[in-house]
Image 1 (cartoon, rainbow over the protein chains, first blue to last red):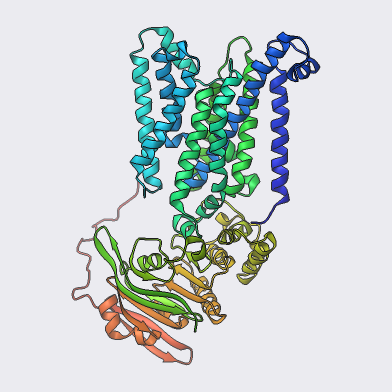
Image 2 (cartoon, one colour):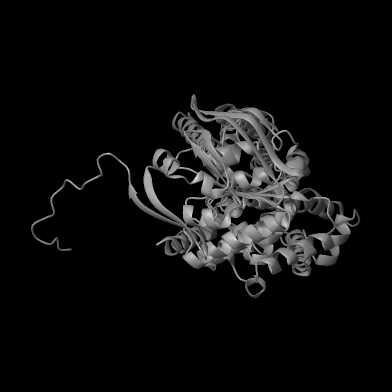
Length: 333
Length: 268
């Protein structure tokens, strides 16, 4: 495949945008700290209190926004490429709903209160469970349709179980904690959360990056892809495992953050010449930039009210989704 | 002549029923072979089975190759001409290079350019494929297959849904590729065009090959009646072989039994 200067330019631009937003995210916060002091504190100099704020509060928050956004954008791009559908999103394989169920159970059973890591670990266990179930349900030779149906069934089941847990919640505090967690947020996270999510998101990226050639080939359908030398079974396995690792890791530390995986690949598709392979890296950077920007926005819009990140991305994302549907309808009719 | 595809006792089951039975077929360089037969005769199954895209019993020279080597031996054009994304013609033709992951970027670009030139697509190079006409899209997909640079091309109903000029253009192109030393295997429903342009026809009926040879030897009255259920006029004139389907040989032709409405139906 030939190199394209426009593509390199796009990646450089998105990378620079991520860097700028990352810096802004580190520098913005309720504690009014001058940029110079912030950077000194980050490098381990200056007052201890300042170092603590920068290194234990702001840095992990910015890192998590970048990682979670990259995971959502990248897995969205791969999922859309695999299903050959611009309306596909990473939650289709059931991972987000299952990870949420794991987290909700950890809150409900009181594990999260007694052991802080229980929540992200339970979410990861939920994500892992969903992968095993999807692969079992779709079968070893299962096609794309079987995969989507299995994912939908598991999403519905996890959603129902989450509703049941909420329904049986003994007190309103537990219920509201569950609901707030599910809205998705990056506030009050520490470096520990970064270390929990990072291995999963990195492993997921390592599994999803090499799928580009197969996704390009799938542009012309499954038969054409298989005839181009693509092993579709292996591709499907990498997709399910990679998406689950990324979304499981992201949901475990940030809760449910909707629409990033849907919107980012769609916005960038034209800029990469609609080549699915090129959309992977671009969407990772684009997703990182979007979540970093959204996380800055929630702090600027309502610093006292704890506006949830997932709420903001959905409020911006849902109208965009409607626009997509209307556009698709116009094309089809 | 160099063999490009050999099938030996190839059989294929679908939902417990045999869709192909004991297929023996060899296709050599320089041949443009038309695969003909009724709907459901097994044409698509044969094209897919030959490439190892469905589980089969028997032997195919292609299906025993590892996938990456097979992709350099045969380029496949499926029937539905599905294109998922709004790519430029150039990017779509370049998809043919997926079969050559180790090739240098320069070699990829040259092969893509050659394929674009062969199909006279230069003026459409930067156009969105989804905005092209059916005929143009068919040419782009053939260019994609050419960019794969394989000695064998397999096409499933490549001229279905195209206007007469585009149909003739595609058939001439395949015949030209065969003359240049490639082998082409295409399933076809237009027996007239098949007769005029193919070097050889293979007639499939109920999953078996019932005739294989020169077009005029395959499209005989008996085969047309038995395998297609039609009669036709076949003549050889100055312009080559002419084929005109005339009537069905169904014992009792289908009649419309419902009576017409007595008054015109109005919308509203």
